[in-house]
Image (cartoon, rainbow, N blue to C red):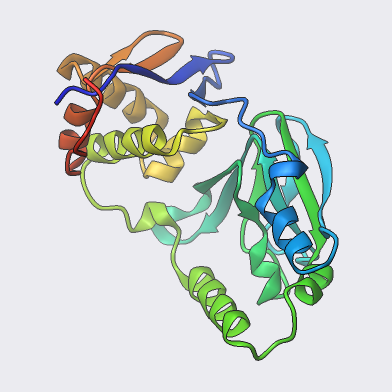
Length: 247
């Protein structure tokens, strides 16, 4: 069944740093609808996070510096980069944190940040001290706290995503586009960062987008990418078609 055509991303910015903009770029979580604020109110307390606008290009934190703050992304996007070794030498983008995600949660289980974090679109980040969040989470030793700590430690020990990706560049990019379409997207991501997350170079990313356009699954122009056939894109990515797609 053919999925409804939808705008997935726009291409904008300077020629040296084109941007990939997801379809719901203005997605914003307001305090009245924030799950963090709701959780705080449900426990009879105030939300420990303080909202603060951030500009594109702002450095949120640097890898190796003391992990003192945790952030909740209420709008925009933050790219995480990590210094690799061997074939992954140099700073490589490894993940994107969007509206509704946290940045810096490793502060709960280790003294320094693992990743450098940089804002890639005008954003709203809600920040709180790691010590305040630790108190807010409640007493240590509870099953929930134990599970959270173990999950965070495991995540900290995992290698950057780009060093363990499977599949061809075509499959990776198609999979990312499907994921963004299903999630609803939410932010600008510089192409060089996205290429790093997917384990390819920017030139390869451009060629893959052109190949996807040639299949008819997407329509690629200079400024945007539109999904023309989401089921076809899922097939390229090796993902099953979802029943009930809108014709």
